[in-house]
Image (cartoon, rainbow, N blue to C red; front, side, top):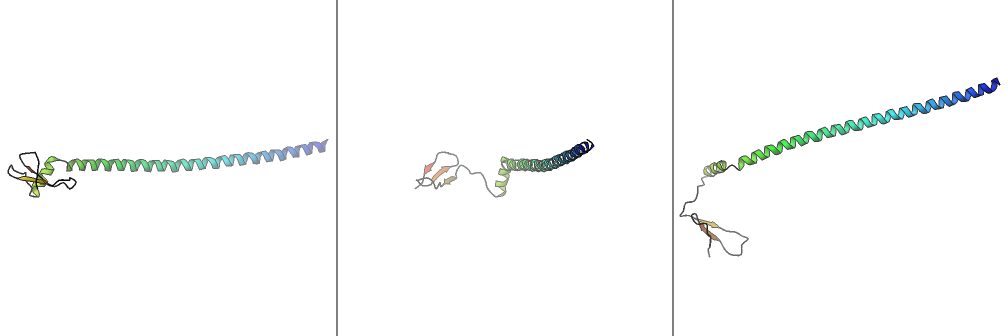
Length: 121
């Protein structure tokens, strides 16, 4: 009977050892999986931060460009620039010549005081 008990205890020890090894392997795999997931989350977090930073920079650039565009559309600025280039408003005696290449007929003339156009031959 002593021999049977010894054999039974040996089997129990072997089984316990196998179960402990299996448990250790499962825990180790869990730790590796956890670390892998943390690395992936960290990378995604970095990418998200970089995308948000780039979006903020682009929004700032858009605002700056819109502000510059508004400055260029200023009537006072356009008037000052035209005068600096030597341009002047037409007076009532001058004619404006308009040549539109897409039209089938010739050039039209318009006086500064009259908005009606007449065709020139």
